[in-house]
Length: 489
Ligand SMILES: Cc1cc2nc3c(=O)[nH]c(=O)nc-3n(C[C@H](O)[C@H](O)[C@H](O)COP(=O)(O)O)c2cc1C
Ligand code: SF4
Figure (spheres, rainbow, N blue to C red):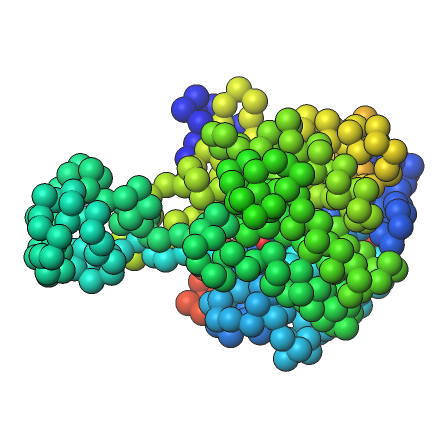
């Protein structure tokens, strides 16, 4: 992962933890109601893919236990990991693109509601993404995959009717600098990173038709989520995926769905409306989007408050803010690997780690969240705003709400490090919280689609009877139970 050149090391230093009385009176542990959203407290576990599904996208017992484990910590809400809305092979990513997935997903919903004794709401993040290929072996790319066109013959100074094999042979003899001059920008990028579709590839029929296809797909997925017993859906409009690419300042589609920000937000709103029509007004529908894309020429606070106000006006039950996480500045992957959108500076903004700059890894999205929330309030809407980014301690979480920066605080890696954060802090046992060190060991596992665990607990009490482990037997899949839970909670 990219890290800021300053290389300043930061460590979590929580202020004083509250006692149970202070916690009970805090803004953080106060309930929140808005439209269909009703949470018992303002702590939220945002979506995190833990790579526990089957290769066909079905729920496994490890998925069920993973979410039940979070639910025992009684956060106000958990958002189930990004779950694919299409019925297409997607590797070990959870899927909701067909009714056959409902049964497994409903087992998670039951487990979460039982384990939290009804205290934790469960939402599911619905995702669509475009195709991305692995970085090819350069030889194979030139010899087999690259479609040869007249522009190659021209750039190489070859006659128009020369055969394809000769063109490929000439290309194969060039070094990378020479290839850069001969290949189109997209071809050169496909060679260096692997081919990646964009929402602007409207010459491809399935990309041109996204505005016609996606509302129906999202709506069907949301209907299944409701049937499976989830309390709501979070539309994934963030990071490097299809819907975020529609919102992006880089979206130059000329079919009314790109260009001006009013056009870029059009499909996200149409998807929302289709989802709302499918699930009704009494069901939670919100979205996660980027307060800042953190890339050159990307969305900044110039555009993103406008999106927040548009979502609020449309009637969303919450907006959740992330930042960065784009392909545009991702590192070149190794041959045979796919690019990963969290490896460049924008990836750092999304999941900042402890080696940082003067600003440090904590609270990098707070200012943007505050501006967006203010814009939503100024437009006359009470839509709750969820903020994430480096929250590990009560004092900061509380001040985010008390100062009106956000209405709900999402703790991702801190919840991974200690899923009992909420119950420990609320019961006056904050000093027993296992603090996240923001090393991004978990994120590295995610990058390689390996079962995600936390280095603070995955080798602890490996001899405990009956614990589930990774296939190599070296890591436990969930953290040990908090021994104080039964007596202290
Ligand atoms: C292992 C891992 C998987 C993640 N998967 C998702 C995801 O599926 N959807 C999403 O919107 N964000 C995902 N994120 C980003 C987090 O939700 C969160 O925005 C980010 O980690 C910053 O919050 P934090 O500092 O509290 O960890 C993931 C993060 C991690 C560490
Ligand atoms: S591995 Fe654990 S300590 Fe390290 S960043 Fe992830 S959750 Fe935090």
